[in-house]
Length: 354
Image 1 (cartoon, rainbow, N blue to C red):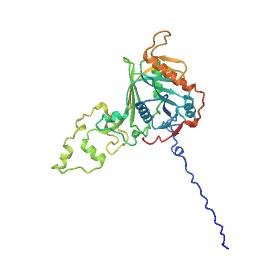
Image 2: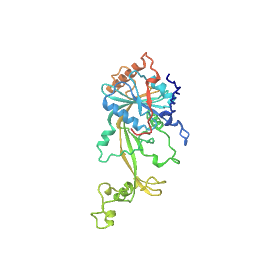
Image 3: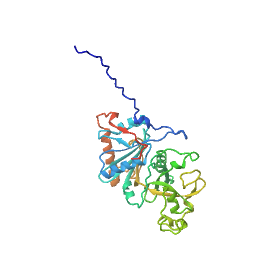
Image 4: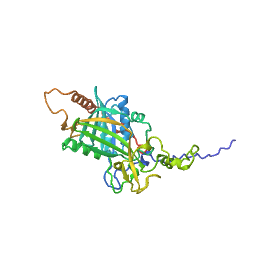
């Protein structure tokens, strides 16, 4: 007879692996200032053409690191679904893109109860278009590791809707403490310039870099790149130091654009030395017009309207576009089918550059 052996079954133990979201969970409160860190969702309502979808991705990168870079949305998701997910995740602001027959619109809303600012996008340029127009586009790996600084210009006119615009955009990015902020974390800046004559807002996004004052371009490149210079065509090493370079070598160091550093930033930008502040546009670029301010979240009392509240007066094209956009969003809210929160999937890889 064959002998039967009792073979012990190998037990497979599934390793316990923490989810990536738990590993990279971001704080809700700034440990230095003690203030709540604002977070954002950037999404669309209705169908967007290809360029506007790319503009949506550019806005998500601009809002890094406290945004959902890979937010997945479905057609049946309505505004309530995003609002239900925003609460547990600490999302404080919505940036909503939409498109009518004639114009695209951008809504900036404070959750959960508003207010909501509606902007008409007159012109826009994508980040890739701006990079292609530059001779030397600049985008370091850690450029989007920290939030950008916000600069508002021309909004001090005394109008209530402009004061509200200033407050909303100030609170959409984290606060900084000038006494404790690290200069190395200040790498981007968002500029909003209001023109009171045209009532248009120029929206720009720049990267910040510092160049030491009084150092030739050749020496600066040598220190930064750690490369042995080519001295074969030179008679003496002094020729390498004194010989004029090409391009930025002829740029004059403006006194108004120089700062004295309080800490070391790199091998060439040392503390107590003067450095020139250089801004390079990285996009996206937009020209906006504020057309409406609502007291609630995409609804409620109209606190400001660019076209007035005339009842029987003929409405301009921009106002008709805005009303069409509101009807489109209203149709989403009136949908009887209740969507679950699981329909909105959020993959938080915000600390990484796309």
